[in-house]
Length: 235
Image (tube, rainbow, N blue to C red; front, side, top):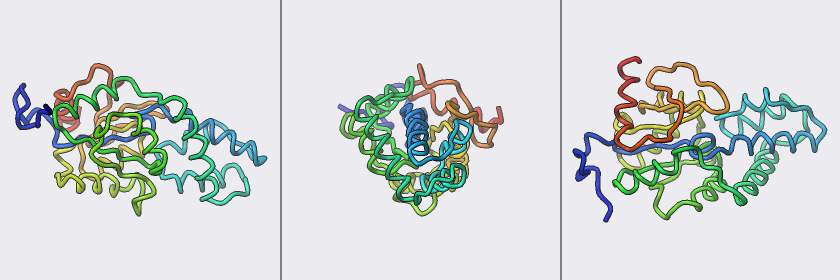
């Protein structure tokens, strides 16, 4: 039987967030290398120039923004929709072969589900990729998904995180967001969501409302509120 936060055996709802809002690429799954490889392949196939410095500028962005940056930086003669489709096709193919879970992320996600804490995926990847990743998890691991092709404004705008909080009718301040990029952290904190940043491919500067940790490995559901309390304390 699934426990609800109000009946959590270690002290009730006060020990647990009302919901946890997860970024996907780089946070839940280590797919940023898949994206970077796809960018290199695509640009090379069309005679352009690409490097990892350019690739790192794309981390966390809405796909439309990233596609335009690819055009601007590489000079390839493709449209934004053509670039998005080509990148998604390449990344989905790799995820179908292997889902590279980030340390501790899958374990924490499943623990939250067992405790009745809703988890929502808030990703700038499109629904096709998000569904591929979520399809490798037990049914119901995520209560809902907010994807880049379903919002008007992508990260760092607060809309994606505000939309996620609305889906479960929860005050953003009672949620916890988990992110890996400056763009994502700014989106979550702008929405008023206390945020845990786990820098991965790119560094995350100090951002008000967020606290940085090295890994989710060993982090449990009851640890989340104490961790974000350090952000409120300015630590």
